[in-house]
Amino acid sequence: MSEEPAPAPRPASLLAVAAILVLLSLFWVLAVGVYARHRPAAPQNEAPENLPKELAWKATPESRRDYLADLREKQMNQAGSYGWVDRKAGVVRLPVERAMELVVREYGSRK
Amino acid sequence: MKAEVTPADSRSRAPLLLLLLFGLLWLVASGLLGLVASVQLHSPRFLSDCAVLTYGRTGALAETAFVYGWLANAGLALALWILGRLAGEPLRAQGWALAGAVFWNLGVAAALFGVATGDATGFALLGLPGYVHLIMLFSYSAIAVSGILAWSGRLREVPYASHWYAAAALFLFPWILSIAHVTLFSAPARGVVQAIAAGWYAQCAWTLWLAPLGLSVAYYVVPRVTGRVLPSYEFASLGFWCLIFVGGLTGGRHLLGGPVPAWIASVAVVSSALLLFHTFVVLLNLRGCFSGGGIAIRFISFGIAAYIVGALAGAATSFHGIAAHTQFTHFDEAERQLALYGAASTLLFGGIYFALPRITGRAWLSGGLVRAHLFLSVAGILLLVGSLGAAAVIQSQDLSEPAVAFAAIAGHTRPWLVGATAAQAVLLLGNIAFTVNFVGTACTVLKLSEPASFNPPSAMEAPAP
Image (tube, rainbow over all chains, first blue to last red; front, side, top):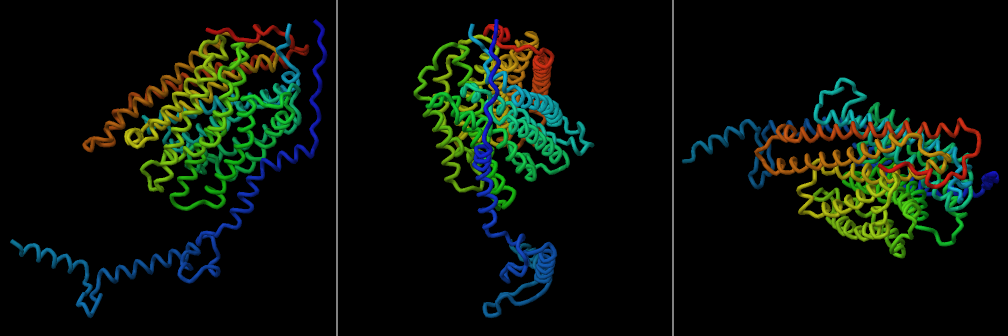
């Protein structure tokens, strides 16, 4: 059986190929190039000098570590020392160990 | 005698065979990795001293190789083949498709290397590390050039359903990957929004990319094998647009009960129910496949059945009452395997069994390997989904009993997880048989120099068991 040779593929114009590639990558360009670039950065991705004072501690790993150390020191002091919480109302702060003793004594004295 | 090998087949061989060959190699690789991950699920000490092959990595490696290696390569090859055939001429811009295929698979290899060395993302169906996304996007676009040129040069002004699904998959994947990349990698959303974005991507990858690739094959092959016009074809466009508009909204059903706004879960539940219309149309159009013969139609009928069962299960488990029993169990994995393996993969198997003889002009090399592949695939998928489903039922019952410890739950589900491992081994054997048969058949084209057209259609079909 004789057979005609199959025709060669028609050439595709470079313009058509470029248009298709642009079309398919348009989402990427819009999403990454436009949306992501103009989206407000998270504090941890922002330079410290560009952040407001109350968020400046979030800027770098060092500043976050320092902030956490300060916070823990403050909390440890509060949990282990005497002080006024509200002098007018007569509310005081006392060490946790002492507070536990008082609670145990109070509950132990109940019948 | 009508030629079964058209110019669109014989002059488009190079990119199609290359994509299919890459796909099959990744299929075998994913099978091996899936087998290791499955063993580790019930025997955690297996290869636990090798960091590269610990469970967290083997699971992600197997999934990535399967989805982006096997399903993507085979799905793209068949989409290009279908679009080329419907255009009635050889694929244009084949150099772009060839280059795209090479770079896509380099991207997959780089992604697997990244996952193996600890860069897995932890997102379902998006295990690809962020740094390979750009190469994946551009290589996918390069492959799609041939398909889109064929689509725009189609013979018929009003496209067929197989056109719609193939073109939709080509256009939509770059979009969903771009959105996922921005929201999860380049400018990651914070907190719970990240889980919502990841759920959206996983659902879109299935409903807007992998499912259309598989359905395109079914809509193309079924009328040609059965020799009948698809029944109720006028509904096909409604089913297609239902999938496109509603499919992406169902991602929130996996977040039921989670710390997300309630409307997200509610929209997902409603969308899952609406998507049943699409499923119903697919069944209505393709019901002829259940009465057809031949190996391609056997695979496609199994794939369509799995697709419908998966859609019904997905809709049912999106309701709070049922989700309360299926969430956080092996049911999610069973559902995923039913969709990816049972539906998408078997539809592509059917497409390849139909397409390869036409692309090469040669019948399949071994009928025995074809029958072995069909038997092992069907048995493996049923065993895999059945085992995981049974494990999910036991897990669900045990989780609702506060007195049952987690270690005891693992012990109760172990026999079924061993069954799932056996299923993975069966599937791997079947896929090795398929790959050997494919390579042998494709090699005959390289050995024989004479044109291979004008084989009778009956010689193109592998014998049905």
